[in-house]
Amino acid sequence: MTVTTGELEYNTEGTVNDADLVVHDAVVMTVDEDNRIYENGTVVVKDGLITDVRTTRERDRACDADRLVDAEGTVVMPGLVNAHTHLELTPLLGAFSDLNLMEMVGGMTAIFGHIAAGEYDYLTEAGYELAALNFLTGGVTTVNSMDVRPSGGAETFGEAGLRGFFGVALSDLFWDIPVDEQFNRAREFIDDYHGAFDGRIRATIDPHDDWSCTRTLWERTADLAADHPDLLVHTHLLELEASNTMARSNGAEDSLDLLDDVGLLDDRLVAAHFRLADDEDIQRTAEANASVAHCPSIFSYWNTDGDVQWTPVPELRAAGVDVGLGIDDHYWHDSYSLFGEARQARLAANLKRSTGQYDSMGLVRMLTIEGAKALGVDDEIGSLEPGKRADIILLDVEKPKFTPLTNIPAQVANNAAPADVETVIVDGDVLMEDGDVKTMDADAVRDRVETAVDRFESETDWELGIGGSEPPSTMDVVRDLPKRGPSQLLGRLAFQSVRDKYPF
Image (cartoon, rainbow, N blue to C red; front, side, top):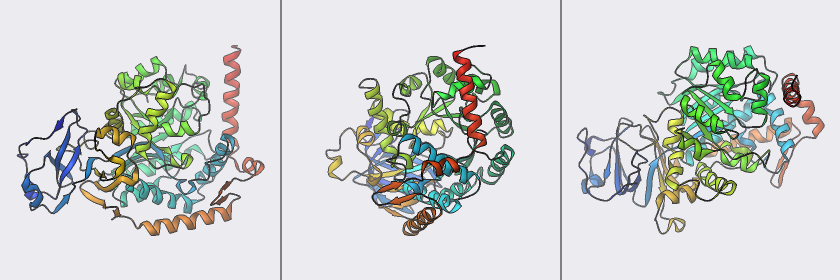
């Protein structure tokens, strides 16, 4: 890490006087290859690109730039990258918090079955708006989201000025929607949204996971990926004990073997979770240049098996695998804080293993540049360097909680929160300044969410009150669940488990 306090020369490609935006007198954490931190730094932006990052000079404070930001008392850093998330059920924050595991899984599966059938649009549309608002105000400038009907997310995030990867979740064993219909929606989404909003919105191809997809679905996914070689393939991988069991049911040795068989184990793969990975899995992933999204809070809150190992992130990173951080289903653990994922990654790994699994700068990199690398856009975002898109956030560090302002990487990884984000810039455009959101009407979003939740309660047996939530009865949930897909899923897993135990 390099801390820079001395004078540097101006970038010869441009001066502050012809800039669109100059941010000066800030602590600038670049997250570049050398992890440079400027104690009193300036960031210059022109046409949405960073043109210079250096120590502040006197003339920066009174230059002729279109917009001048006196950032004294702030830490300036790259916008955060949420490498894996889901957005549609955002209005149900708090609904699942105190349920047991089976209540949560059953209730969630039933609701997603309705969404897949085209119901609850009012809820998901409000959810996308609320998610965009909360991520924006919390410093998350890029998301990678897998949803059932992602068009609303692409529109909302695009209009808000944010950056996002979105894809249609595909599964033939999780719900009862015809597979042809799912792939038609995926193709339409790609045609409509890939490269939309000046390239800030991109489409992905999203087979849901390795435990609710048949080999046929994976093969169709590979065909779709072959038709769109510039799109990422985003999935849940090695998340549950059922993962490798289903892979064997699909005629492969394990999940990675299945993906390799169909041609999807490559540098386009973004694998969420990867909890069950062994040394061979890590090596194969590194050799394929595939990436991983680590989501520590969701499994700290909803750990399905306490004996399952923790995601081997240190080993993955040591092998050269790019690992970003993701919030996953924030409405399952009631937090929009990507900063919190950095802290949780450290705490959970240290508890499961031993102290010292991460250094603070490594966690900052996972929040930013490594997330960008995982999504294949590290040449555009993830660090503050000349030539990159100007995705920048300013943290207000003139607070008692940041006093004294030492070891800034540790302050960000351990102490920062969404409420500390003061200003957000994407593509050089100021989306929030001094806490005032410029691209969304926060009050209107809150009103629409309240209305959507009231309607959801009136149309279902869910009770969502200020003291807690009450899900529908078990019989009501069972009656509401998808039937054909999940029954086949459970049957395949049970049959394969018997074959594993009693080979024949």
